[in-house]
Image 1 (tube, rainbow, N blue to C red):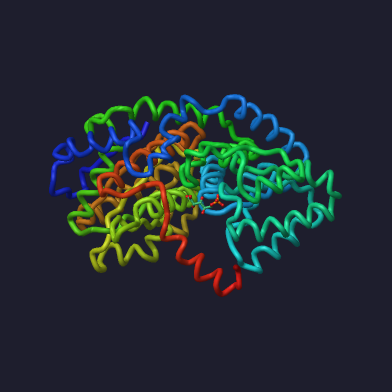
Image 2 (image 1 turned 60 degrees about the vertical axis):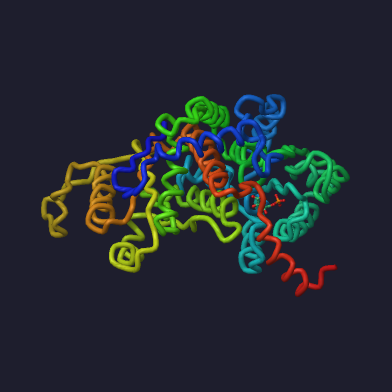
Length: 424
Ligand code: PA5
């Protein structure tokens, strides 16, 4: 379902020459003998996810859909990005689907929080608070505000029936609060870390509340599990992609810009940046993940990419079939001189722009380009794409001898911040 084209990647080594190291990394991942092996639960998840909990997710999501206008997802990092990426990719940005989904708990911005609180004041609200550790400060701060708001608005009992917690099965502050208040609770598996958790209740519950078919996500996930099972780089595009990244890194192109031509994929790019950035950026190693949406950003950083300092390679995601398409109209007067496009589909124009940009950046500018083609922006493709990037990321990290599943560097800002905030 995902095709990789490295024609314009300018690799100075053959991908196949990395087969032995890839096989070694593959075995480490599949046998659970690599670094961070406590967190490889996502590998077999397409086969062994908890079917009972999955059914409960669908049931509770339906109840929530029927009783709220606004659904607040309160979480940060891996406890937020995947759900938002899926909802935006699958629904688009102006779908007007109900309930409206709002994301909180991912910032300390007083303006952002205050505006949301004002916006939801007179609306019917349900809340999903998500935190694996149960103690993340951005999320805890927002949740206290939301909890008090819900209790004042609905009374304690009704508030408790409108708040759903997704957290560890037995430990952590959030688990304690959920138990005391009698919240409906979903479990984050011990062996799946935040940025790999969109395929667990962390992502699936808000995605289901948004009205998306989560069965289709699991179908895509399982297809990817089957398609990407081989360690052979000729048969496994996720592994070929991991090797391309390592070769380009060796060629001193350390920045990877994920390019999409669909604004509704911007959050997928944010999710991808977290996955690769937090997994791989350690020990002074890793490719720096960044993103751009074309053609929009061709009118800003496009200039730098074409002619500026050589810092990056591009990984371009092309979508074969758009969610919606329509024909560009004719205008008899043609005062805007746009009739040369009359009768053409808008998606065709977008595709020609992508082709032209690949020519400009890849062929003329010699900026290495890896092209990944995805069939569409539906739920099945989303599930497939998640698993594709999970596997690519894990192998890419193991090739660097890095633990893909921890994030020790994140603690440094927390420590400094806690000191300034007077936290003991
Ligand atoms: O990938 C990760 O592990 C992190 O980004 C976490 O998801 C993020 O820090 C939020 O953590 P928690 O779910 O414990 O609140």
